Image 1 (cartoon, one colour):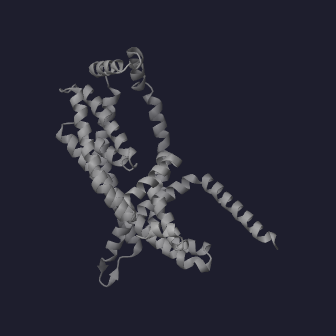
Image 2 (cartoon, one colour):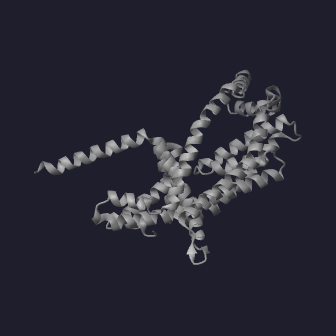
Length: 363
C-alpha cells in the first residue's frame, strides 16, 4: 500500500510524457487548433454583437452567427489579396530585375565612408571585393525556378491547412461549450467549478488581448504606410503591412520591420532610378519607423498589454525577455498569452501564496 502513491506518481509522469509525445506527433493539428482558437477568440465580440440581432422574437442561430464571423474574415482576406498582392508582385519584379552593378554604384560612397570610419578606429574591415561578391551572391535570383516549384508543391498542404482551420474555427464559434464539455469529461468533479472559472477568465482576457493585437497591427500598418507615402517611397502599403505584422514580435519586431523597409525601399530606389541621395532616403524611412515605434511603445503597448491582460508593463517586459531567452522569437510571441493563462490558474489554485496574490491582484 505504501508504494501506491509512488506508483500513481510514476503513472502520472508516464501519462504526461505520452501526451507530450502524442501531441508532438500531431503537431500540425495542434497548430491548426491553436490558430483556430485565436480566430475564434477574436470573433467573440462580433458573435456577441450578432446575438443582439433578432428576427421577430428569435435570436439568430449560432451557426449563422459563426458563418457571419467567418464571412467577415473572408472579406478581409479578399481585401488583402486585392490591394496587397499586386504590390507584392510589383516588388518581386523589382527584385528579380535588379541591376546589381547599379546597386553597387549607389552604395559606393556609403561604403567608402564606412571604411574610412572603421580605419579611423583602427578596426579591420572586409575587403571591398569580398563584400561585392557577398552582395552579388545574396541577390542572386538564378534559382528562382526551384523556389517557384517548391512554392507550387506547398500549395496543396496550404489548402489543407486553410480548410482545417476554417472547419475548426466554425465549430469553436458555433458551439461555445465544446471546450467546456471536453474539459468536464477530463476533470474530477471537485475541481469543475475552478476549471470553469479558469476557462471563463482566460477567454475574456485573451479575447481582449488578441483583438488589441489586431488593432495594433492595423495602426502600425497605417502609420508606416502614410509616412512612407508622404515621402514618396514606392510600395509603401507592402512595407507598412509587413512592418505591422512583424511588430507582433515584441521589441525585436520594430527593428526587423525597419530593416526590411529600408532594404525594399533602397532596392526600389535603385531599380526605378529615382532622384535623391540614398542616405537621405534611409533617414526618412528611419524617421517614419521611429514615429511608429514611439506610438507603439507609449500608446499601443500599454493599452494592449497592461489593460487587456491586466499586468504591469515592467512585468510584461521581464516575461517577454525571459521567454525570448528560453524559446527565441516563438517564445516572445507566446509569452503574454501563456503568462496570462498561468496567472489565472495560479489565482484559482494557489491564492494562499503571497507571490501569487501580488501577481494576480488585478485579475
